[in-house]
Length: 258
Image (cartoon, rainbow, N blue to C red):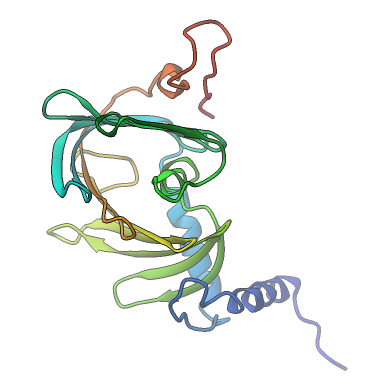
């Protein structure tokens, strides 16, 4: 008489079979799922998600942007406000005091302004191929979202392959910092022939001064380096997440933090 298999085991195996069919979606070979390590790697991914900030926060930033068309680097300071699960707003100001970038992103709407290039664009739940909307939404608004389809333990840390809609995302963890006490998350996102990458080194689960991240759009050559100077002691007000083009009147569109 055949032995019965526990439901939890069969559900894990079913997930692994589905994952195996998608292991090459990122363009790189991933090992076949191992029943002995899969539950632990899946739990480690859930831990990474749980470590992302859950409450709204705001910070002052230093930044450097390499603009590939003019082949110049712009440095300055700026601010960022994040309401995890709801919205993100980032404004970068150059050394001359002029706004370099103003990005407002929610789950189903976005607006990006690049005043030096006289660009102002809006959209919905789409991810335009020439703006980092999809990546910023995935990194800040819906942190580390996606279905786990492959995973492996490496000498430097765990690695996961996620499917987020039409995008495939490789996520890797490792120590970082001069003393290797920081935590590095490196994410490579591929969608419709476009490849973007961000590497973030942080000292704790909560945002802190000295945390830094580097973003590269390998399709266009755009590069952005950001470091946190200071973190606000109180959460941002609801107006921080208001649609920048909404009228200042009752009923104006404001995204509420969860």
